[in-house]
Image (cartoon, rainbow, N blue to C red; front, side):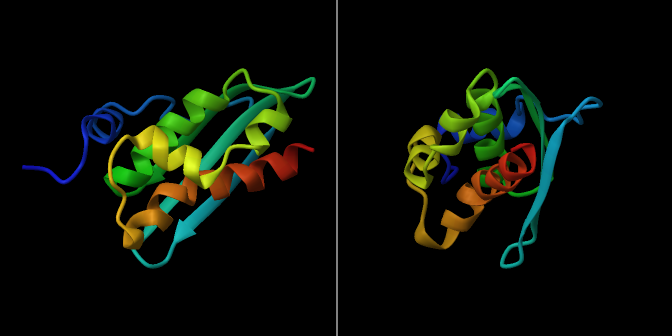
Length: 121
């Protein structure tokens, strides 16, 4: 039996937006030195909107699933709405218990998104 819920498993096995964006206008890289997760978020921002979001990662199931969910949710969002996503939002989207020791894995994509959004402003 796996400790992860169905949402984490689905987005880890079949991540959405797991690709490079050739026409990215903003990007950032993030790492979690505690577990070795490495992540890059790329955005195509036009007229204050995230038109497209993608990621590449060498990361655990929780981090990959979180990045998949996050890039799906921010595509089409205003920069303001994307910037208001919270750690609690990310954890809730995973629909599973995230142990305190794995919280940094779940929130790495959001921290990286925030860096990318700063470069888009």
